[in-house]
Image 1 (cartoon, rainbow, N blue to C red):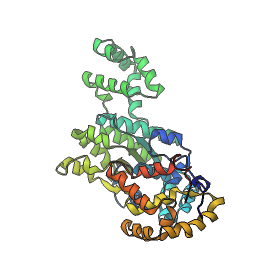
Image 2 (image 1 turned 135 degrees about the vertical axis):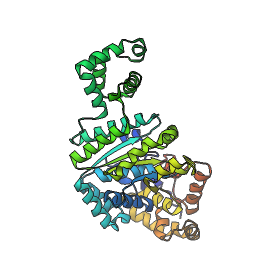
Image 3 (image 1 turned 45 degrees about the vertical axis):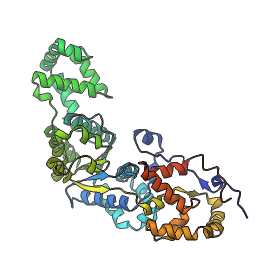
Image 4 (image 1 turned 90 degrees about the horizontal axis):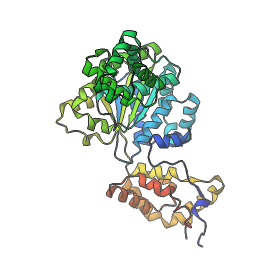
Length: 413
């Protein structure tokens, strides 16, 4: 007998599912949305690698990479949250998923590292970082915000504060005022005096253009005290780490553009990455597949790459099917009816297709195939492969699952 019920009568649709993780979606999401991250195999491997570097078993940082739509941004953001949320929240996340319940040793190790002190910083996108100096300023600004938020010592010699301190000195202020009257600098600066520059710097907000102008002036006029370089940033980082007695984990998502924009100046980036040999400063970059960024013949690139532990986030068919199953949330009031359908009429119609798809997708747990219902096994496999063939991504599967155009369809007609 046909069932005329609709999908929405059996399933809740997660309205906080975001097809892409970026600054906007993070701002729009509820604080606990990271807990929806399903801990598949490559995600757990990332956590294992992070634990090893925190334990200083390897003095390298992580390089998280993957194809479009594999969820690497979600994984990276969840790593940040794991390292910063209170212990009870982390334990609740761990208890939520079967794959993590088997990793109690990893959990206790991560909690031990957290108890000794970890400061996390997170930044998204690098398209506007056109030079090492831009990079150093961005690292300083982002990390300082995290330190201030945690009520920790933020360093007396931060890069922006060094500029402020230099200009504030009376003789320097007079010199800076005189420079701003020169036609070249009067045309460049929107500020007409040293005091106006100081006010703009103290206000915070977006100061990249102003800092760029100051450094351009400093370079042309020979004011070496205002020059930003890797050595000064590293000295600041060491000061912060030592004074606060903490480890720093800086996660920079969508970092691919930095390498594209700065191919000829990787040696300065390499100095920053090498700090991990001396101090617990972990500069974690998240990119698309790194093989597309440089050629293997590029020796500088090879040296940079060796400073990191590669973490490849992937969604092979078996993991993709697990995630699909996780995305279908059966309503508690409908669970008994739904289980009856899956084990009965609906299941009997798909016995052959389930076994065939399990073989192709290398799935050894029959429950995975039950969990993807009401998607037909062949439809799920086809959807995943169509997305890949048309240069889309696995994200398309979850767009389909969430779509309001499908949740009204009558089930099992």
